[in-house]
Image (cartoon, rainbow, N blue to C red; front, side):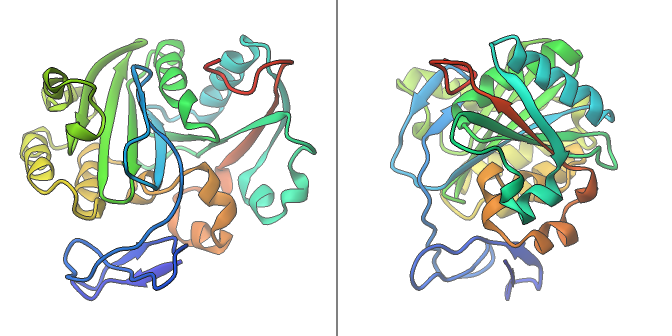
Length: 278
């Protein structure tokens, strides 16, 4: 569902699930009310459930070859005992969930087409697997990977990978993800490290500094800046796997680049295992 922002006339995509939902953005004075429930996972180092409700994540691979990304994902899953059940157009699956495998012993992932500036985005149905999958894809494809998370639509951050290693992290409010105060420095973000993927390097450090000074406000403004800095469509960052099934598919047809090229992968889970990270 899309609402027009009275602040600057821009449309933002929101997913109202609470009573008296009041859509807004960073320029609007009114409050927000979102209700979803997931745990916050940053990379594969910390697993916490902070006092924030909505959470979604996207794994963005610097690649213009979605088929290669799907092949790498399949290899990572089959290497853990999963088996590929289907690889279908996401647009068909989200419009007709009868196309999904029966039962609960399967695992889903959505893979985008290639964007204008050479990115492929991946969405998985279990956030706990995101860091492991991002790390594995960066190694398998020898490509930079930017994992971006959004929590309660007001907190956000990223983890940046190259060749299977975490090189940089950022959180607008490190207190949401750290275990000890000393860890806060790990989430400051460093534009120099992200130079291989930045279209406008000089603007990135000020963007991160501004985001931390405004932590807790609507995340749309800084995420729009991140999207512009790396050449990613904003709409790729502001959604998650489950939302593809909960939202109106027509919104994605209108808003997402290469929506007809998005694919849904379904994997049979092996006995005694539900996630990639187990």
